[in-house]
Image (cartoon, rainbow, N blue to C red):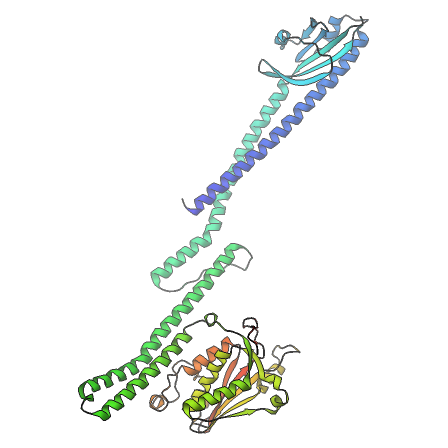
Length: 486
């Protein structure tokens, strides 16, 4: 059974039960009140009749009194204490009541009885008769007219229930269509995606707080994520196949050369092994960078802690000197020397080191002189804030790590392109001279975005390049401050 049919069926049955229960309650309450009212009326009239008959019993015969007060549809009689039915008078259509058994009641009594499948109000009132005996004046009055009214009420309620079920049935159908429409749209969209291979999104109505809007918005968000992942995967496959083709070709060529001549020419053997090892290392680094770029920032598992920028710079300087035999000069701006506390930021130490190392590695590849690492406050960022960017009065300025090399530099028209994947300023000499894959700066910018930081380049062709990393003291979009603080 389809969901729309279930909603239609369940809503119709539920509303039908509600209508039936409501009308049944109305009928029960109304009939009970009506019968009680009739009983009270007959009881009141019987009391008045008993008083009048007691007062008139000395002047008028009992038979005449009974004929004067007999109900239109019923019976009146006098019952003595011995239980004998001395006198009774019935209306023309209720003569069967004369056959009803007689019983003397010592106290007042009023009740609804059933006799010969008809209901009556029976009232018994004890009265002292003119001869000094106590007798019961008993009145039995038919409820046939009241029953007719109640039957008419039952018919009206049944008709109203039947008529009310028509809009209930139609509204259940409409309700099922309204609820199913976004689900059907999602199903149709998914079928179109499967058939065409193109990602599509639902047309979301104006924002609201209902679940149908949230479901449609969530579906579109999921499609955005799937499309992003698909694009990343496709780009990863394209980039990997493009970039790995060259080192694999080199490795295959040197391996074939070794296979043919390596045993007879030792110098060729050494050259081939070094080339194969170099290309294998470059393939490993490039694969790791591609895999990291293929991830979303949410999958990087960032750990926030207090990081001392000067300690990090000195440690990286020692490691870089050991690995590449290149000296790094560290400079600390006077404003930070006067306030050493400003050298501490809250960030992910591992990702920060990776980002700085990428910038240092680029400086090493494109320059032969010493590299300078300068720690300062980002005055350019502060001037932008002063020009109108939103800030708070208590916000601290960003810390600035500037990596300065005195190498070949980058032309001004190329500065915006160097962060693109696999982009190289000089394609003719990059691989032989630097061995770069064109992924370093792309990865550095991705890490900076994840750390709520920014990277910009300042360069002059032939003079050198400055890579400026701007770090906030306490990023707003990182996880809560961890217990690993120094």
